[in-house]
Length: 366
Length: 207
Image (cartoon, rainbow over the protein chains, first blue to last red):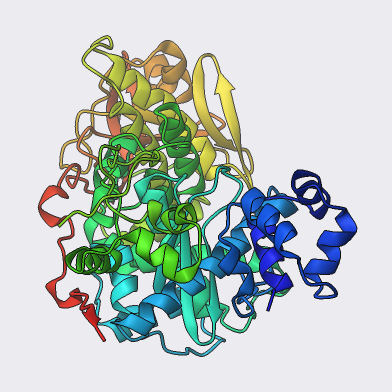
C-alpha cells in the first residue's frame, strides 16, 4: 500500500516544497498534499513520475512508516542559520540512517549500547568525568573518538550536506543512540562535534537542560562544556601544560588531545581555576586567528573514520556484495546510502589530513 | 624621616600579605608577566635582535593593565613611562625586563632606564642629595612609590621597589618573589600523543 509519509520524507530529503515537486512531476499541488496525507492512493503513472523526479525507487513508497524524526528530539546546533528546507533534509537523512542501521543490526552482531543514565543534576563536567570512569578511560586523551563511540554501541553515520549551516546532530530512537557527523569541519572540529553530540545523548536524553532558562542555547552550551571536559580532562591538562602558555605551545599541545587550537585555548581559559587569564586568552585567540586557526586547522590530524563500517563493508565484499546491494535491499537510492557513509569511511584519493572531505568514490580499505 | 630596611620576601604567604596591602594579587601579576613572555616568544629570527625585549615590554605593560585595572588601579602614562597607578595608596607599578629575577642579587634592567623612569622611581631624591643609596634611612618625599614588575627571560618574576639612578636600578628597597620560573618549554608533547587502545576492538559478525 502506498505510504504518503514516505513521499513526504523523500520530498523533504530533496529539499522540495509540495508545490515544487508538483511542478516537476506535472501534477497539481493538491495531489501531492492528498497523497502525503493518505487521502489518495497514487496511480502507477503518477508514482513512476514522482519516483523519477525524487530519485527514489518505486518500492520505497510502499515500505512501512519511517521513523519520522522531529526537530524536538534532534539536537541541532545552528538552528538560527538553518533554513526549514535544510533542517527537514537533515531530519530525512536521519530517518534513512535509522533504516540503514536497522538493516545492519538485522544481519550483524554489533557492539551493545553502553551509555548509562546519569543523574540529570550532574554538571556537564561531572557527567563527562562519570562517563570516563564508566568506560574506564582514566584521564588519558581519547585516541579515536569515533571508534570509542562505535565500540560503546553508539550508531555513527555521516551527513554529507551541501551547506555548512547543517551541523552534526544526534538523537535517541527506540533506546538506540545515533550521531550524524557532517563533512564540513576539520578533523579536530569533527572530533569535538562527536564529543558534543555525545554530550547531548548523555545530558539531554529526555530533552532536559540544567540551565535556568531551559532553552536550546543552554543545551548547546552544556554539550560544549561536556565535550571540552571529556576530550581535555582538567587533571591531564593541568599536569601537561606549563604555566607559560603561548600560541606556539597551544599548537604543539593540541595534538595530544586531538582538538582544535581554539578549543584548547578555550578550555585553558575556562577551567575552574583558569590557566589563561581573560586577556591572555583574548591575545592568543587573536594570534591564532592571524595564523588561520579561527576558520580552519592548518597542520591538522588525519580524519577519523568508522571502524565498524569499514569491517561491515569488508564482510560484504567477502560475500560479493556492495553498497548497491544494501541500497537495493533497503529500497533506497544508492546515492543516499553513500551520503550516509561518505564522510565516515576512509576516502580514496582525498585530502584526509585535516581539511574538509571532498567527494570521491567510496572504497573499502582493508 | 622614615626608617627603611631593605627586605626580600620569598615566602609566598608573607608575600601575598604584602601584595594585599598594595591591592595587588600574585596570580594577576604573574599573568601580566606571561603576557610579556608570550610576546617575546613570537619574535622570529627575521625580527631585529631587540625584538623579543621590545615585544615583551609592550605586552608586559599591556598585561599589567589588562590584568590589574579596576578598583583603585588606573592607567599611568607620564613622560614616556607607562604602567598602572593607584592614587589612593599612592603607588605605581611599571613593567621591566631584567637580567635575572628571584635571585640573591638585585635584578638589573636589561635596557637602560630613561630619565622619566628615574624621576618617577624616586631616584631623584638621592641624586639631589648627591649620595648613593643609604640602606637604613631613606626619606621618600616623592608622592608615589614606584614598584616594578620584574620579569626575566626564564620566567622568574618579582615585584620590587627599586631606586633608579644613572639609567639603572641602584638597589631594591623591597622585593617580593612571585614565581621562580624555569619551566618554560619543559613539556614535550611528542612522546605522549594518544595511541590506539587495543581494548576498544570492535567485533562485527554475521548473524
